[in-house]
Length: 305
Image (tube, rainbow, N blue to C red):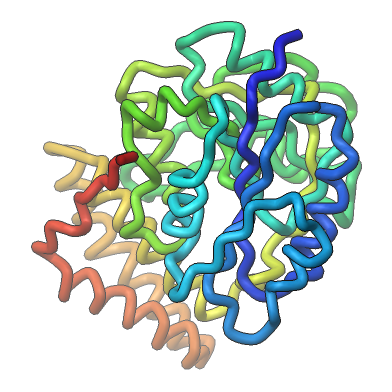
C-alpha cells in the first residue's frame, strides 16, 4: 500500500484534556505518514498550550477569535500539506488501523470526494452512531443517520455510498477542496459539513461510508445536549442550509412550511413548557435570519488560496 501524506485536523475549544485523549490515540496509529494540526478556537477558560507541550510533534494554531467549526477547520486546511485531509472532532478516540481503509478508498477511485468511517458511541462502544446518512428532506431540513442507535452485529460490513459524510470524522482529498472550496463559514456551528457535502456531490464526486474503519465519539461535550446554545445554532443552521441549497418551487414550499408550521410550533412548545432559555434562543435565531434576509455573506464560499 502507498502511504500518501494525511493531514489530520482537529479543532479544540476548552476541554484540552479531551483533545489530549485524542492525541494519545493518534500516537498509536499504524499509518506511517501523517501530520497532526490542532486549531485552538480562542478557548476562553482552559489553557490550550498544554497540547503543544505534551505533544510537540503537532502543528498548533491558536486563533485569536472563535471562528466556529468551519472557520477553525479552514485555518487547519490552509496549513495542511497532505494529499488527504482528515477532519476529526477532538471528542473522539481512534483505533490503531483506522486510517489505512480511508486512504485506500480515496486512492481507489478519483470520483471519491469524501469518506467517513464507522462511528460508535464512546460510552456504548457496541452502539452505532453513523454508518451512512439518508438524504435531506428539503421541507423539514432534516436527515437521519443510517444505523444510528443500533447495536453493531456486523450488519454494516460493506462500504456504501452515502448522501452525507459525518463531520465528526471525514476525509477529503486536497484536489476536491481545490475544486469546490473550503467549508462554508456562515454556519459557525452545525450543518456546515452537510452543506460542504452538497457542494462536493454537485461537483460530481461520490461520498462513501467505509466499513472497516472505526472511531469512538464522545457526543456533545463542548456544546451540551439540548442547551439554548445548541437550539440557537442548530436551528439557525437548518434555515441557512435551506436558503443556500434549495431552489425554485421546492424552496417556496419549504419556506412556507418553516414560516407557518415549524417556527410557530417550536415557539409554542417552548412557551407551554415555560422554557424561557430555549424560547429566547429560538426567537434570536428567527431575528438573525430576518436581519440577514438579503445578506450576500450567507451565500459566500471561501476558496483555498
